[in-house]
Image (cartoon, rainbow, N blue to C red; front, side):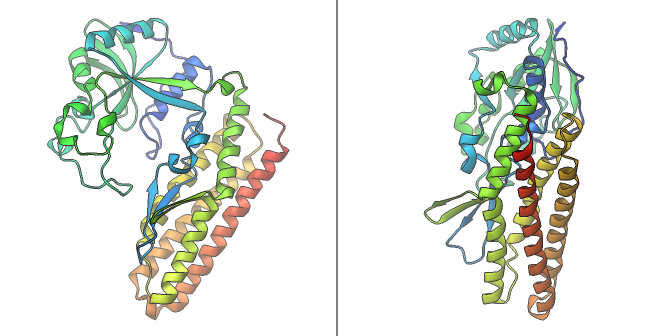
Length: 368
């Protein structure tokens, strides 16, 4: 079997909130650019700045999480993923073999329904898609990504860390079935994203030209500056009947929407609970990034790392406090509700000050 010579050891343990393609792109960057850190990638995709939308015609504010490109598409310029569908399985194998001989891993798209090591393998529930997605809105279908790092006459050696934690061989027969992708299943025809699916898909990773010759430290700091600036700007966008919010604007909306609804109805806007639960993930991505800047790149950001840990804990307490006042009759616990409102305001203020602290560090650093 022909295998690539790895620039770094492959890992199988990753945080549960990372999506499947980030370790694969990270591997690609290490092999082709010489250096990478995993946490750079979701931050470059603005996952650290959550975007939520709200139907402005709803009486009760109900914020739904959105992908970052709703507000930050032009800023997502570090890398681009494009998919090419090969004309046949044999043509695809030839492409894989040629890449492996050049010592380059190959990212493929396909369906977990046909991956022998996946819990989805021939699971009948897989072909019964839900009506709504976990982020809200109608269900969206997409293929799973794996990386091929070796190829032989009867099997391939693959890397499938998220969520399957698999590094090993599968047969060419299994690869072919996987590689047909979700496009082969009529059950997904009505799902959002179906028209973008391909058969025998190969993912091409393109690094933006203005990043290619820069020092990696400079690239990382540039990404930190982008996400931090985005948070402080609090970008919004209006559409008929809908509002998109991020950063400080999102925090302000949560506070004002809670106060306004409670003051007029005397009830807790319970729909805000899912928003408070979902938005915590963004702080995890930023925490990971700052930690890696400190530990992997040896940048002087240890104070920022300490503060983001405090910020995360405060938002966890906000969510827990929200659940407590929801369980109780708000009309009989006005004092407790007011304490929650005051606490929420304090957390929002401290987080803004934290991002100003990051901005101050960025303005003083000589790197980049």
